[in-house]
Amino acid sequence: MKATTNIDTLDHKILKKLAEIIDCVNDSVYIVDENRRIKLWNKSAELLTGFSKKQTINKKCCEHLLNHVDANGKELCRDGCPILKSINSGEPTRSNLFLHHKDGHRVHVDVEIFPLIDSNGKINGAIEVFRKATNHCTIDNKTDNTLIRDELTGTWTKKRLIKSLTSRIDQLRIFGWNFAILFIDVDKFKSINDTYGHVIGDKMLVMIAKTLMAHLRAGDEIYRYGGEEFVIVLPDIKDQAHLFQISEKLRKLVGSCFLEINNTLLNATISIGGTIATEDDSAESLISKADKLMYTAKKNGRNNSVIDTY
Image 1 (cartoon, rainbow, N blue to C red):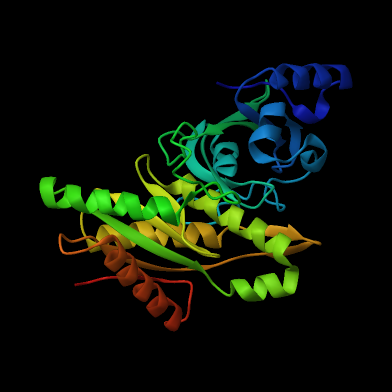
Image 2 (spheres, rainbow, N blue to C red):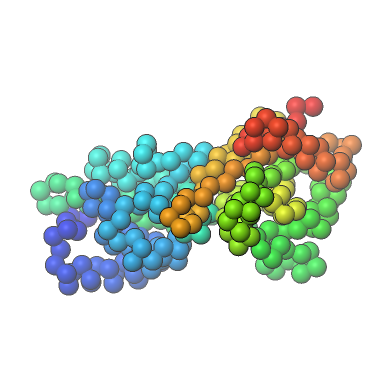
């Protein structure tokens, strides 16, 4: 696909008509000029990102807006921007990345970018089409209501966790179906609550929970274990190196999130302890092992992962 329109020279009526057309598209779409400044932003983009047209038009997507990062939390606006790659090469670009939602969390999206090329071959910008990625962790709304969900974050609760772990340990003993857990604690959360208040603290927890869910696989499970504690259950983990890789990706992705509070960007970090279940474990002993490893991560300076090496 090669568009042949210079967005900055369009007649106002034509520009309005183009905006109406992309508003009818189910996918999220925005158009930037050669300086990556947003010129058009459709309704689907508003719904997926939380940012309105008024908040985005004539701004760059890196200006506290989408701030794309890869699966390792690396900021792409400064190094590896897919839009800039398409503008420089004149070729379409496809990416799988995480964008920043207005509420702070990361949204996993599939992205297609097409350069805007005029009749003289000059590149005048690009069109980005993005949609929510599939095959990731979700919470089933149809599940029995007796298996309680956390009202704030939408994750499962400690009550359901114990049932799940007990069942999985039985399956491990009978069928050999392995799994692991990660115990996650938000670093210095009390300080966040004391400084900014519990409303902001709650927003931080929701931001972290949604970001974790965006990167987990279908079949993984996430639970709110306590105030600022989460437990993630991960089936089919190959070994400690595999578990560490997943843990580090989650840690870095959360570290890339931020809330904008009174023109100040508020970040959070997490400490993680992880362990692979054995046939000798109970639900309680498994949680206890991961919890102790998480505290080791905190003692090591916070914002890191410690995995059981047996």
